[in-house]
Length: 451
Image 1 (cartoon, rainbow, N blue to C red):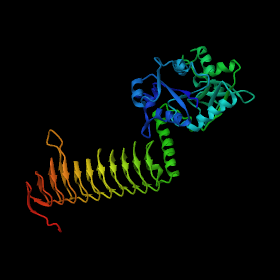
Image 2: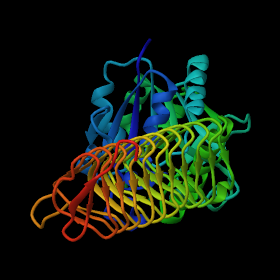
Image 3: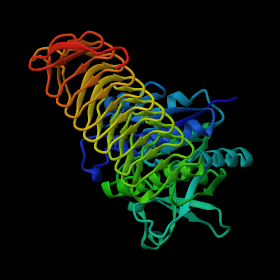
Image 4: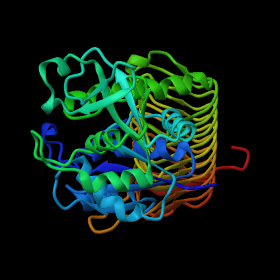
């Protein structure tokens, strides 16, 4: 299959964003807006993106990575000038080339495929995406001739009063026949209100040469560009609705989409229910038949089937099948939780491995710990993992019973079946089946095998 180059214009400063961050790195649903454009290109077919960067170029490279080619626009001299920087990478191409903006994250693979198919079917020198909108302010206009065909393009800054009333806008996504684009670029000038090289002027030059220029009308929603924080918030809402629609179409129940926030790339299994005021952040995967929320916050979580997470935060942790968490628990990064575990009110875990059927309830802190199966952690238990200079690990083997308000001073190991009394401060290892009580705790007896 022929690989089609795609030039993505991502060098803009974005003055109306009032931000030191490159505009294309402002996030929507957990991802930079430029990521969505590149994802649409990836899903459109065999496409090789060329990203034109300028302001904050190093930041863009770090955020997007090495999966694309980059060229730099040293001065912000307009969209036509940006495409000129990519021209050397197009010299060996005689087929189509896609050109689009990095700040139009709502563009879909379907629209890009339509543009490509229309260009192939007509052999047009250029095919552009247009849309009819209620308020065209801020966009260039598409001018039609008496026969209804594209007769010209004009940037808003250069519009006459009559042209400003035109509601068909140039959406900024193009497919050019590459030799025609390369032929047109040297003819661009800065003779306009902004003193910039306009890419639409390449289309006008092609029209003046009698070349075929076509327009494919697209969904007005897709062409929304982001030029301000208000635009960012509006597009975020549209993108969030798309993500939730896809989940619901795949068999996920979203009780109240208006108060549910799911980031791009999140995976949720069939028959899971997401309750209001819940956020599923980047890199989160949730299994089937789960109950998430209300008021759950998941970031980088790996959640098995039949898990319930109520009013709790789970960060970069793995949760086994059938486990219940919350309300008001906090799982900080690094936890691996087994199956059918119960983690309850105000429990906090960090970098802990917890075995199957273990119970951790009521204001306990378990950090840098390895817990076996069927362990019971009493209310107020703390693993004292930091000695002021270094972190240490607490090992709790299977079927240990920890009494309320026990302090476990790491490094320490409690053997299988051991017990601590309420309020104990355990500073030494407790052997299997030992019963340790007091401050400091001492082993006072051993449990019988049938106890």
